[in-house]
Image 1 (cartoon, one colour):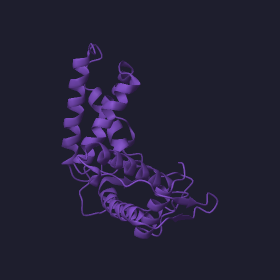
Image 2: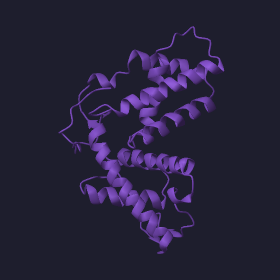
Image 3: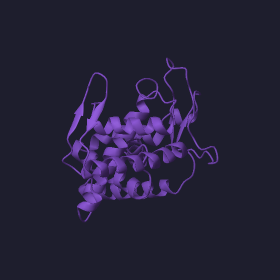
Image 4: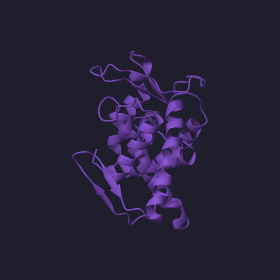
Length: 224
């Protein structure tokens, strides 16, 4: 993951919420997911805002020491807005992460792709790269609009393959059929947002033994 001042700011905020996180080793994947989700959320705001009020401020001057990871932000009204925005967003993301992500060390069913997802993975060859990206983007935006701001890329990929796998391999993929598929995937994303419990199961790296689960245990574990 490239070093940007936004990713460093996100790292700082995550550490404030949970000081035991090791975001440069065992929890690096968590940071990568969080940064990707923030990027998706920012893009969503830019494309759906009717004015500049809802988009991320720009024109920020930042100095970053790539060796130490320390950074210095030019203090002005613009950067203050960004820092406050990131702080608020990371807190919301963390709450969603605790509810939607579960860490497990067992080979439970979620680690075995469903037949639909396996089938859908093969059938993706019927779509161009642009079509795949456009449909996944639509799914991501639907998830965000429905309040699912955590693991958006992971969920979008799973939904794409899972819904696609429901179709017959003999389907003639006309443009109309592809649009119908996208509509089905979007409906499934909306349905998913109304479920409770974890949606993403993470199997930790065996080389990293300081395992912990940051999740709200008050939510029932429904495997989607």
